[in-house]
Length: 108
Length: 120
Image (cartoon, rainbow over all chains, first blue to last red; front, side, top):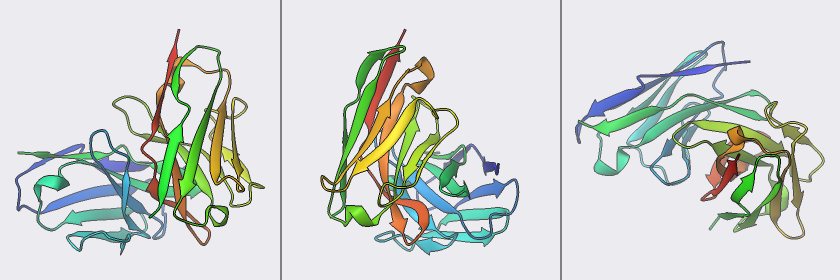
């Protein structure tokens, strides 16, 4: 079973700064990786799928990169509404979903 | 627009049963596989079960296999999760989620969730 490890667990940044979140897979997942944003009391929202494809309605400030075992979600310039928890996800054994442990982006 | 509305959560004693429902609208329900995903209080996301677009193919996580059963009624645009022999570790918010489609199991829309609390 593939394990997804996200780092850091918490990222403390200020509005306007750039955020880079990492997701590392225990073995290659090709480009089959997605990213979600979750705010308190809300359901997760899909941001990126297939490593770099933005989901419908997701602004260009969110970008995904990587392939194989190392992936990055970048938020180009943080706005107040971007402070949230972010999860990466892979389908390691179709169709089951495997999630990373999450990275919390908090206000510094 | 796509809407998923879960219901059926509540407080149940250990060993009891609950049936969750997820009413879907705004898309062709019968054309998409569907997932249940749960989140224990203060914890991360855990996949629970998946069902194919026509209900033929069903998959369950090891942690719930033999106790939970996913099903769907395409005539009612509704997804279900029958949960039996509930345990304390099943306490969580349960979300239904729609797949992207085209064989991609990634989810692109989630409901607001329904809370299941298993008491001892």
